[in-house]
Length: 308
Image (cartoon, one colour):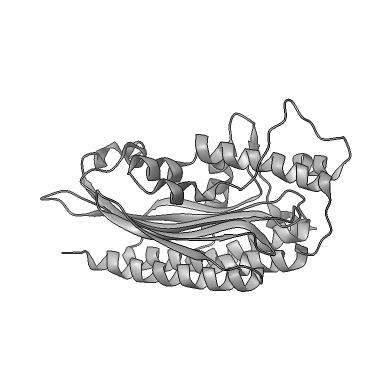
């Protein structure tokens, strides 16, 4: 018999996928999402929705999945070995957007729910998720807006929530081999079960529902900014960092592959084009150098704004 909590979350996530796709397709104005439904032989499946070659989004995806099995994969038990050997259900929505214009940031988000079960013991459940922003030519007001929406989504749940999950995001989306953050952060949380199911579920909904308010105004402001070959080359170079993080450090990618998820859907997060250059460094004083100097290490964006 399915846990009613799982059904409750699944209903919300399917609706969130619909709302995200509708709003993002409308913002693009030139392309829509195509859908692939898939099944996982070990249990479960999902529906993947992908947009390509639009007026704004060169590639993007909004994926729903519900997978289950007899044993949690190693990526899910590495930090919680007491859960090894339990059966599981994992349900979530994950999205990533790679705009063509280098002045429009790449963005990623996801919200997810796990239940791990073992005969004779109470189920163990938790929520996770968040959203983050990866600009190539960042604008300060955009970054402040992004973090202000994130803070406001967290505010009803306590004054400490945004600072804690903002710091967790900075730590998580960090490329240790490059000694830099992937972008300007946002929110990240995992293993969330404090305060009971209803409170945690309400927080997950607040994060999922806040994404469009955080991202679409930035898209609208930057989509018509002119760019040329120089900006495009830099965007593709920085997309390489995005690939490196997802394939080397990301727990979600690892969980999807280890749990037998659909590879095409898991790797949907990859950009359509990227490039690498040997020992490249930006020209001092250039817009490209500004990204490295001011945006690729953790900062208190809202504290700086309020104190200025």
